[in-house]
Image (cartoon, rainbow, N blue to C red; front, side, top):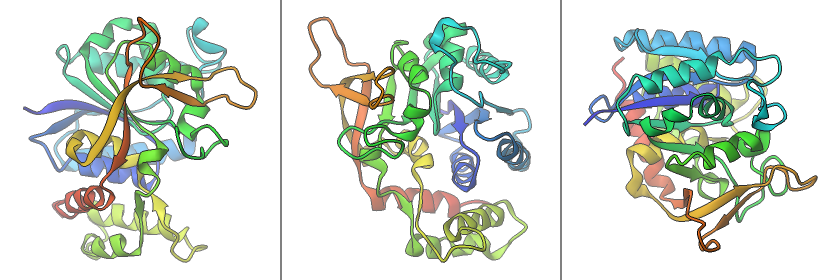
Length: 299
């Protein structure tokens, strides 16, 4: 069965690689909406690139929109983050409602603001979501935003708390799991056939990955993280990941701990697990799946 998916991506080479990989398995997943959240200029470039990519795959009907560019302002007591029109959340809830109940998988590579706002505005969409797979959290490793917090959660802790409390099946892919998932020299060499036709979709994505790894004209080949792709790969190849059910709380108030994620395998009486926390992955196998998907692109 082909599952409808929504990709909530960050702009950049890794986001484009995620979308391109998703398009290679039409019998498994079909994108129904693509969102990009980040700096407006970068989002605009990513949207144009994504629309062109979808057009070449005959998917002109798939919406490509900007997500919420900033965190929820003052928590969920406000209808909208300050200065935002909420259209990203509107597009999200419309796309989810257009799908049958318990059918949509949502892969979130960045902060959860857009999804949280949609859930606040229309809690009924939770019944349409088969699951949400999130790049987020740091439990037993050093955070990448602060000593205790991972970037996506720390950017909008209130949004993460809303999603975890919504009763939606959530899978967290934390830094503990993805720290070693990187594009290194060997992996990039394996992708070299993608670059033989620079004007093709595959060639452009390969060029963007190479530029990200080389830092444009400034760098000399520094491994770049591929964790943006992890939610999609966890959906496509769940057997390559392992984890446990837990009740996850997000610290929203602490001066030094804001954005921290705390997982309890055994909560107090009446507290049920609200997330599957992935602890580890087979890194080489996961990179192999992504490599093979990208190399299968029709040029």
